[in-house]
Structure formats: C-alpha cells, structure tokens
Length: 226
Ligand SMILES: [Zn+2]
Image 1 (spheres, protein in one colour):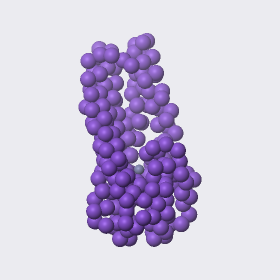
Image 2 (tube, rainbow, N blue to C red):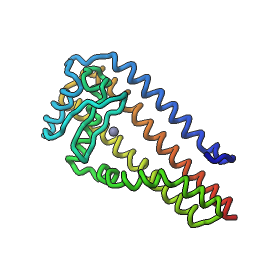
Image 3 (tube, rainbow, N blue to C red):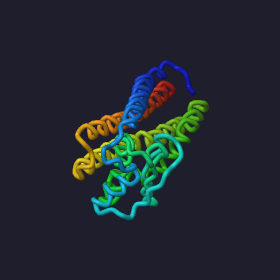
Image 4 (cartoon, protein in one colour):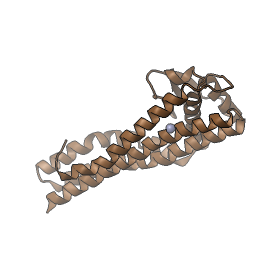
C-alpha cells in the first residue's frame, strides 16, 4: 500500500462498496426466509425457466460458499451456491434467474458478455502486475514503467465498466423470464427486484473504486514526473 493524500480518493468507493455489501446481505437475509408459492427449488425453477426460453443444454450444479453463484460461459455451467441451489426462497429463485440471464446472454451472443469473457485472462494478469510495475517505476523514477502500470490498471477499470451492462442486462432478463412465465406473485417479484438491485449496486461500487484507483495512479505519476 502506498500512502499519501491521494489515498483519500479511495474513500468514496470504499464507503459505497461497504454500503452495497451490507444492502446485499440484508436483502438476501430477508428474502431467503420468504418462500415462493410455487415452491420449486431454485435449481429446478431455473431449469424450467431456461427450458421455456428454448435453452436445455446448460448444466446446473451446486457450488460451495455463500453468494458464489455464477455462470461459466466456457463450459455452459450454471453454478448455484449451497444456500440457493435447493432453496425455493424468493432470494434463491431471483439469484438463480439472474445467472440464467447470463446463460441467455451467451445464447444470444450478447456482445458485452463475449467481450468480458475475452478480457478475463488479460485482466487477471494486468490487475496483479499493475501495482508492482507502477511501484518499480516510482522507485527508479522510470516513466515507461509507471505508464505500463497505469495501462495494466486501466484494463481492470475497463473490465469493471463492461461488467455493468452485463450485470444489469442479466437482471433485466431474469425479471423478464420470471414475469413472462408467471412464476412469481407480484409481491415475490418485488422481493427479487430488491435482491437483484442490491447486487447490481456492488458492481457500480467496484467500478467507482477501480476508477478512483486509476485516477490515483495518474495523480501520483504526474507528481513524480514533475
Ligand atoms: Zn451476474
């Protein structure tokens, strides 16, 4: 960690992130205790929802951990966390439907999903190397290294920017699937919306955090270049 006054730039993202996390936790806690009238476990519900959309080649598996749900576009596998997989709660069905939204994105060749998947390896390397490279640049007052560090971090910012439409669109698809199938009561639909909106805010917070970190690197490097 590098300390100077620019560290204050990280505060808004940090506060927003903590706030969003706590909203997700409380929405999840509330709606994982409210059960859908249909009563199907989320894994079966989502299989049915996807089937209605003409998608039947997705593998649905349980995965360890809490809120570890994700869709793997490489293997067409939808992994639902233990608390979601077998639960018929409003939160579980909402989260599973959101992941099914990602599966639909892949089926429709949704461009931002493809772009995000394409960027993953570069972003993993870039975000790990950004600070070390940047730091060496400062240590040796070597501008090209500072710039390389900033570019690496820029990749991470780009990634979290592209993540926004991908996540918002997956939730929109989830709501459309649920509403279109008449799967939920109006009250249950409201619950799903609360959970998914809270989850979306964490991605907004991540983007703002990443953007502010990038700004910080630029400010530090400008100071050093003078
Ligand atoms: Zn998602």
